Image (cartoon, rainbow, N blue to C red):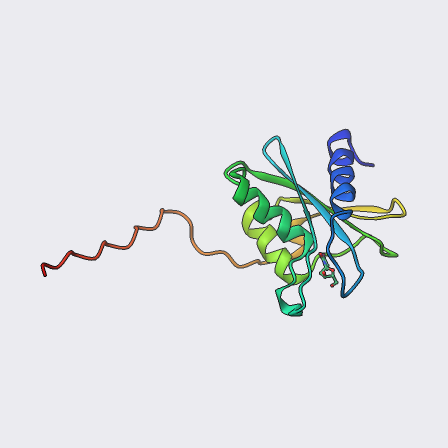
Length: 148
Ligand code: THU
């Protein structure tokens, strides 16, 4: 059973799916990510050069960065598509979701029939890759000005 916040997230993902640009696959996907109290939506976007396609989950997360909301913790993300079973995120999106939300992130997988499955990120991507983030990286030293 979904709680009210999770239902809201799925509804936001469903609404975002309407904006999907999928002229090649015709497979429309919507996503909605909760960063702190904000919900940021995304849809899949396809291009004539197929490899440039961006999935709905990553579109939502990238939009959060672009909008300045990604400093807040990513606690949940919903994704929805017209599939027999609740839709399953691709490997690239799993990595991005893992890096942003960590192993405890709640991932709500849904389809248009109302089937829903809630999983933890650690189950979608066990042992996901992360660079050490203990200490902030030093900015590169500035190039010295040389006299003409
Ligand atoms: N797609 C997503 O947006 N999210 C997923 O989780 C799976 C796949 C998109 C990419 C492409 O536009 C279309 O679905 C077919 O692969």
